[in-house]
View (spheres, rainbow, N blue to C red):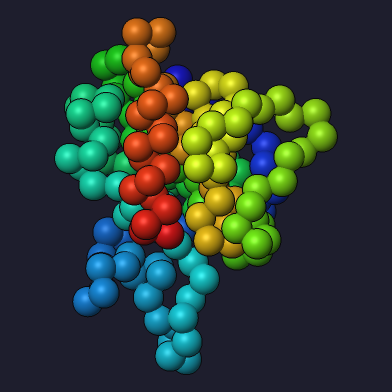
Length: 160
């Protein structure tokens, strides 16, 4: 029951495969160096959250898997029993020029703290550097999904 991420200014190229490998700087291997020695612009969304950060939110889950959606890299964690989920979408470089996301015509959103925009379906849209990103938390009507999303945005911004 993972909901699809709302349209944003992100590219919609396929998600990078989950590797979980980290370089000595703690970055995912997708964000490490390229064969030519330069810094890669790829970020593997599946390496951005740790199991002990996702499990308290949704319970038992599949450990995060690349999924389709809006962004250069999209990863979803889902509880197969409750269908509660967390989805992270990382846009490509330059999709949030000047570190700000742009409102899009026809997309209804509400302002949140620290430049976050809340969209329907538990989606929090935010800028991380020059990338337009989203996190979606779905835990049902009893959950405080916006508060949880704000906490996750703080973690994600530090890791993107």
